[in-house]
Length: 370
Image (cartoon, rainbow, N blue to C red; front, side):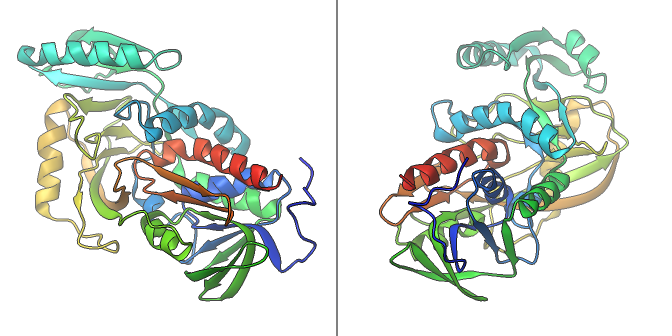
């Protein structure tokens, strides 16, 4: 795509687009915009990419995201379908695997049947849904406990090597001319004749268009940019990593609480051969809180331990904090006058939805050039 003279300036001190935040969403946005010929910079307060929300997730490419009518559900399903091409382009490892949504005990089978019908109505195409008895499920997943009575198989899930994805996005975007400024915190913003002056810890950054992909701090950056979207709550999730299990599928218990702020977590085979269990979810003490307790681990063991016939060896525990949206949905706001896109409350499934969010952002940027 050619550079649009009506949008772009010959002034090398002015970026066409400034992306605030180098998490997975900001990186995929910058990667996509780098293909349009725009002059892009990425501002990140941490000393490297992917160290915030991105570092504390479970590497899952989701399918089921309730409610299905939500913006995050629509964008997650669209983003899911874009991952094969993205990972192939970047040379990043991913695995396509089914998810087994299971119940233990025959009294839970009616709940399972209604969940199956609900998923059949709302999913289709590459996201096929099948109902299976426990014996058939154990042929798919030999480590399933004998106590698992039946379940739903949902195709289309996957896991991705997130650290490699982050690194490859940075390297590829840099090759296309994207400027990354790490250790550069945005502290304020003011309108200018060409767009926005971003005040940062490293000086003023001038941009014609701003994309706020600041993760946990996106509500604060939005305020600086003149938008008031409410405060994000920090949602803390604890995950345990196990070696030696060799789980083949994503495994999650039913029922899923549709009114909850979380899908409930799962047993997840990672691309490096380990198995991730979790996450939990509770409100963190602060956006910087990464603490966990034995109670968190007991909750994981109690919920997921009975689903498998083996335990494996716990190798580490890590914590992620997600930005819980005040609307319980992704907030994507385009301010045409100021040429700003705010991406606020991009919680789970932000990793899955990132390519689709970037597609939306690109549309707004290109329209602003007209």
